Length: 111
Image 1 (cartoon, rainbow, N blue to C red):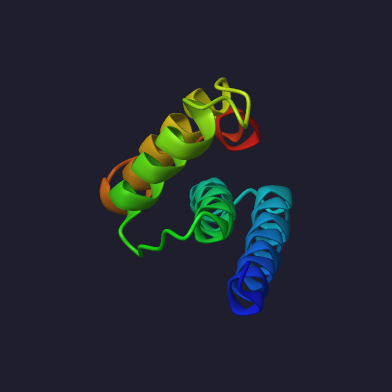
Image 2: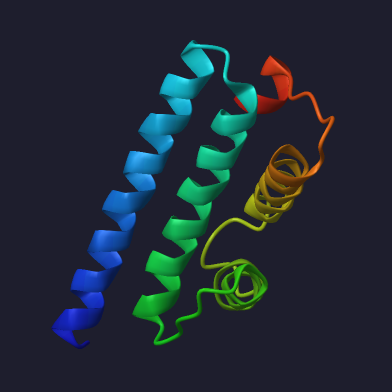
């Protein structure tokens, strides 16, 4: 495998870890909407890290998720139950980012 793809994957994993830490910090100070956003982006960057190792790259959320589902979940390289986590994280991130009167709960942010 090309070393630059492996390096890019490692960079994206580090970015995912940063987003996860940010999500935890937001959760501690009861910033649930921001925590949901950061959690989703942790997942998104981790999926992009995995996808690039397979030679696929996209910045479009739908493309990243579709490729990850096809290449890792449907092929059972990764447990298929993660599909539910990805869908829920995406749904909650969109609601918290775009719905004007959406109030995120602690329960949603810690799931």
